[in-house]
Length: 312
Image (cartoon, rainbow, N blue to C red; front, side, top):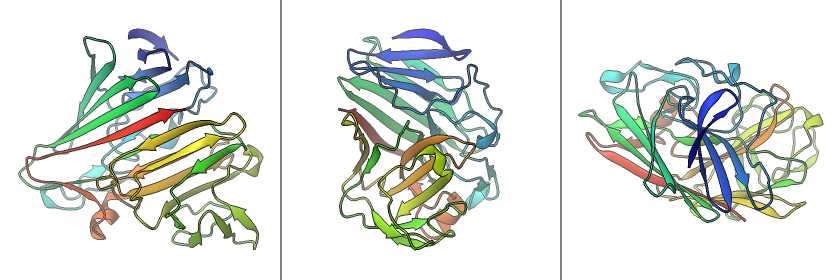
């Protein structure tokens, strides 16, 4: 473990013989870099910026650097909190915690780091402990509900992954249908359009494979959710040119939904993909609560879950 400057910001580095992780505690505790020390591959999307600017609370996500892995909580889209005494409290774009400073401390053995953040407006505290175990990264989450009523939320890891035309999604075979939730897609049609997965016919009559990554010259972006719960509790990517894989495993009962974001030159010229296991759908907590697809914490209760990343 060590402390360094990374793109102008204080960073904490957690590493072993296999992996090197770089966190920015003042910038939402973003995981800014994930490098395999065996192959020197950077698995996270990196912008060309030499300096990063910490966003103000409530900032628009698109106004800032979109590299790395940001924690998104308690909603993805900006929306009002849905009910109870906090009804109408505005949740910012991509949630609250990606803009807030987190308090972080390393374990005595240097193999893990625990971080915690508290809401400025809503009754919760979110903690995350990250532990390295050879080629595995274990993220352990806990949300404390400080209120005397239920607390509703959506959580997802907004982890933008570096990609190329040789990058392919690894998805359980039982997930065979998706719903598009991105209006600007060139292939999938308006919000709410259903398609088979992985092969489908796009709006132009062309057969496409949604598990594959288009080149940056496609100037396309897509966001879709699988319509069935991901009961297998895993997903991943493979760089088929080198056969390196990044796999996610997590409890499917607590994180039942799976979204995919692909920006292939179509959003700000960026080029990345993201696997987004979610506790609720579809991006908007207010909507998720209406359709009973938001996660719920009992009064004065705590909700816990894990996410494990494996590089092989």
